[in-house]
Image 1 (cartoon, rainbow, N blue to C red):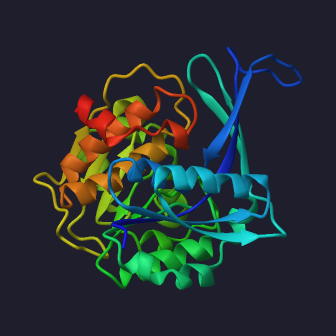
Image 2: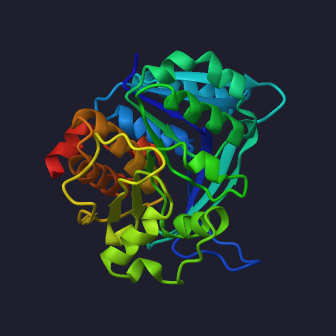
Image 3: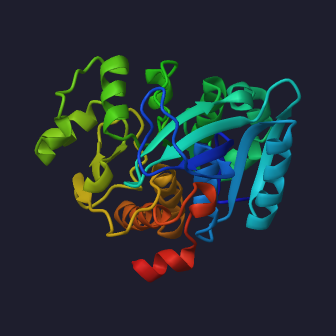
Length: 322
């Protein structure tokens, strides 16, 4: 049984690079590449490349993208369970990256939006047998809820990356997680729409004690707020709805800085962070600080290559930069 189980999206990336983004109505010449991606799949590949056994559960269409990903999965040594649909296309993303490594993305979820809770239940053993279960919301929310429910019936750490922002998210789903990993925009959305707390426009610039107070209002044991080039802010809440206790750090709140890199493409950095964090929690026996330091290097190195899943660094590359 794999140590980490990722339930989430597979998306075929259709990536364009151009010096500057085109204005509305403007056409620009650039370069193109395509490859495997999707938030869940990226996270699974990032984790698996750290030498941590990983299972991915997702959905694809019965099409060229859905068939093509199987070769990549085999080359990675990744265990994958893919629900296949004839009536829905595989997910696809149009990604435009400029010379500053900024990106614009439009995603068509396709088959991901139909990942079945029953299919998740069919693979209950993969979820309950894992040490860490990772979910996002780039797929059918009902399937995510089923996965988190099954994780809650076991001793697995349930990690939720509430991205992309989805108006189907519920407070109940968030509270099924042990570790919540939003960016600053996602966290503000969750707090306002699910917990009734309107945060200041630049709340992330508050002092650490105030920021910790905001995070505790989410009522999740661990909130890891990713802040781009400012690293991440970590908040531990001993009064959360669900408290495991085995991840408690020495300090209830602290920051982890980014590593210095020369970014080429930041598209999959957040996914690399989540996958690296899951791997770190397994490798470092739930030591939160060590796991986050490891995840930060995984995320940083992923930006030095173009693409998403294929750009994820290996364990050897990460350890060379630690």
